[in-house]
Image (cartoon, rainbow, N blue to C red; front, side):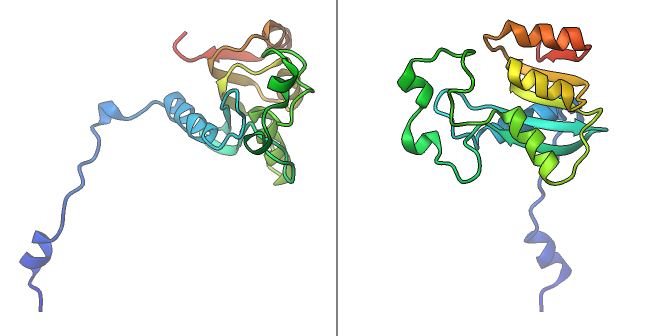
Length: 167
């Protein structure tokens, strides 16, 4: 029979991070958005989105083909084949954007997102901006830019708060 001392010698302490290393809520949700982006099947850029309300995650999404449709990873990028530049002709793509997928996931599962914030690895495009506005999302946090100035003007006109990581 093992003694209490033997059991304690077999126990390895796992150091807890110092409080100073603990991420802020914004950093935390951005880290999750970047992790969600790793599921992307887009060949051009990997984007993740996290819908949050009252510091609770409501839904996530990443850019990729709809359910039942072959992924660009498997068949190539239609936009590359057609020479479509970033920020233009969004309809010429197999994939949904991360924000669209997050909103669709919330709807599919009956999750109310009105009044939520969205954390996105990249600035939303104008199509996603319109969906975000009509879904009642009140704040957009993003990290990297995107060549779509129209989306910024839509958000500004609709009174949606924009927050860019680090600036």
